[in-house]
Image (cartoon, rainbow, N blue to C red):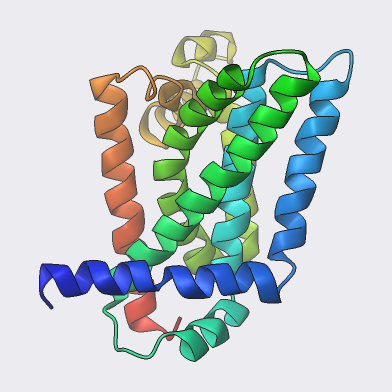
Amino acid sequence: MTTPTFFRHSFAEWKPVTAQVRRTRLGLWLAAIVVGALWIAGRPDGVFLPTLALGVALTTAVTVAGALAGREAARVTALTLRHPASPLALAAGRWLGVVLLAALVTLLASVGAAWRIELGWRDGAAAAFGASCAALPIAACALAAARLGGGVLEWLFLAFLLLLSTLLPEATAYVPDGILREATLALLVTLPAVWRYRLLAAGDPVAWLHAASWTAAGLLVTAESLRRRAP
């Protein structure tokens, strides 16, 4: 497969992604995420805007990835794609769909939240940009998790992202010494983590290298899963 054909097939996968939003409950889930973010922002004890945007981006990426890994996505793909596509092209197309939807939902939620707490739309857009950068590797890993372990592994991954991965590695000093501390430190340093991906928007090279590695790994695992089993 030539490079232009690969990219054409990848972008063509956007059609079943948009069809998923129209034909399934995915659109309702995405709307619920936006409404929930606006509700949280309007509370007196609401969270910091960049933190809220990051939570929206990660939750949306995992939700969309799970929807695209299901059987309904396979039926929509069969109905909308009229060409043979390589597993890697399908994986790249689905990753692109997850990232774009996560970015769009995050932008809507962030700008709306900024308006509710009387900040400018630029503050909301800046928070959405930083969160969308973090969604790049998360989307690829969420697709792989959804393909390999279904909903269980997918939501365990989201729980890790929103709870444990927000901690800095230095926080493991408060974990009891021994294998538990070593395991926690290994997870925070090795796996995709919020504490590291907060630095992507600032252009941190180590964070971008880590993100690129996990993006590639997630796409390759997803493509191999698609090759072994019908999507």
